[in-house]
Length: 416
Image (cartoon, rainbow, N blue to C red):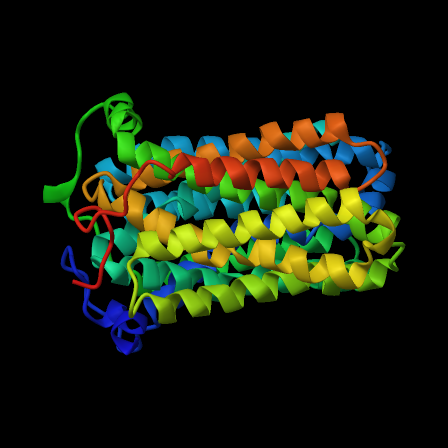
């Protein structure tokens, strides 16, 4: 484990930069980078009502800024992946962080809904350009099971962001107003930029960079039959989480009638479970390959979704919070066994265009999440059952995506 944590001291590929006297662990650096979007989304959620009042609009229109951010983030990843494979990781990270910081600073001064939506879109493009490099850097520096181990470690550290972001946003709102939230994001982006310029060496040297058209690289990923199935499985498995995030205020605050101050703790229980599962994944990778653990995680997600549907369909009167919460924790927590191993397997096929593969995976996740989120919104009938049914559907489809792919030694990411 120490070899992974301190891998930044022995970079796999250097372009001649002098290493600083103090080197921070690579997983910590990448977690700081990856935390941009969870902070940008979750921190300002408690401030939407105040923002609507200041901007003289409705809270429902302010909520469109979430969709604006998700769209911009997906486009940032889609464009950033091929650019990273062509020009290197550091230029894209620096460009993305600068755009994110400038947009966040401008959001402090916004006075209209139109400006809010536009600046959130630009902020998200910057976030997508920067964070698409995280998994690619891991693939540049590691091989075999170490890819999945490092991704799990990055995810485990990064999960602190969605855990504390709503509380931090609410605290900032109570003391200084909603504009200070974007000031905090500006400061965070600038600090991460300084740290990464100082600490993070280029991991994708010129002789490995691709000069082909981005479309050709994307087609190469799409046409790879096995990789396509793993991308689909990861997108569908992650979609259940997006449906939960969308519906969680209704589930906990409306249906179970919990106080608003309890919501961060109920939501945070799922984050803590995912962190624990990421830690478990690191331990399991000592004995099992990535595909075996991935399949186990998908089975766990499907089982918990099935139990949730049975609970709310057959025994709705007994469907208490004390029964629902543990099952929901297992459903969301299973992603700790799924995401890192699916990503590691996908990147196993595309070492030379790892950022492009990462970008396509990310866009697939967001598109699938948006589609099934709309389906849930259409089916919503005032009970949690449609939400649970959609989650069961995505979990079942994720398992079916891999049902005919044998976990062959040649394709599994192993410790060898």
